[in-house]
Image (tube, rainbow, N blue to C red; front, side):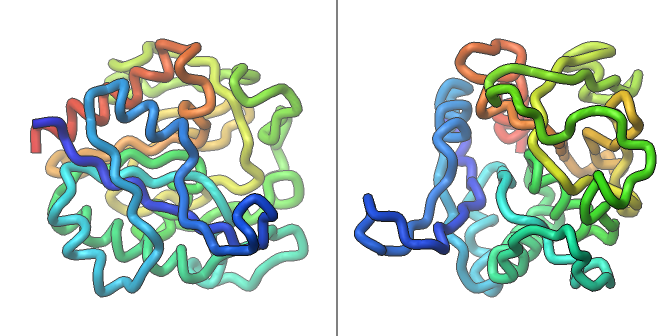
Length: 242
């Protein structure tokens, strides 16, 4: 059977004319296509009560965390700075419950952009609230002006890591984030860095956990990029083993 992948969904909080003002639960279509192409079955999990996370995760073979709003600094003991963007507390709370259950049940996790950030926070790490104002060594565009399907900067991978085995020592990625991992949570290890030193990828330090978390957006680069499809193929392979 094809692995069943739970994609943590988002919600449109503002009225959009095409939906007649109705609220919409969704996932960007690139994630759906990436999972389908890797021979997995995607299922979007709508934001709900944290109490439902256990049952959702128990029925999934893997959990995919996607991009979106800023993670509330409340969860890592800070007040929101002047350069924070929109947060969505209900989404934070629900996704943290999904992560907790995925870790408890040892289900594979693939985390993208906001996904790497909320994973790190849930496990006890912190974030830079805004790179341009909080990270003194920023030297490259982390919010690229080029169309998202094209890469704009490199990521150097850590030798011996799963990421390194997957893509080699260097990979060209796209970039659309103003927050980033700061203090790394216990249970995670850095395996990829941008040229100016930002953590761009994390993996589990516990061999019993199967985690790959990245800061860029492979879903916007497929189907044109076979390299970015590898991340979905790898996730399905990891999920099929559980």
